[in-house]
Length: 168
Image 1 (cartoon, rainbow, N blue to C red):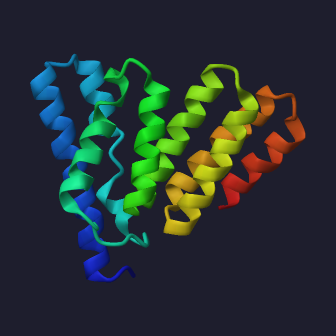
Image 2 (cartoon, rainbow, N blue to C red):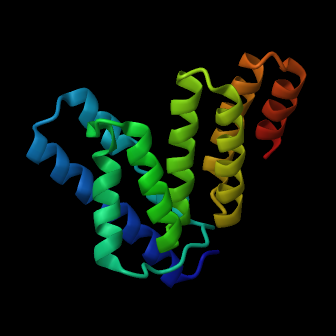
């Protein structure tokens, strides 16, 4: 079981992200679909069990980082915004958020038909997810990678990765 301080740290991250998302939605008067996406993409509190996350190094900077994360799709250049968030998440030791940002970058690359980049980024996101103990997220990255491998014309590898996700 995860120690109480580690759980509290994880729960605080969830609260910080939800608070940033709700604040952004209120300030920007977003539509219901955007609200649904922002709120439902916050990882579940139940997923905190087993995570190995460090305490916030600088709570004010972490709060600002999560505020930028929830506003990422408002940026003129979403990919540039994601790269900046990824660097800062890494610098602050926000590894779980870093993995989520890298996965988002992979989706951007996939949608732009840059499948080699998408595959590489999904491998990176998977490694980080495993490092922090986020099994649910790690499985999702494997399934995403399986789809990318299939789209790259590598069905055998796609099947192998999908099977790995199933047994993870």
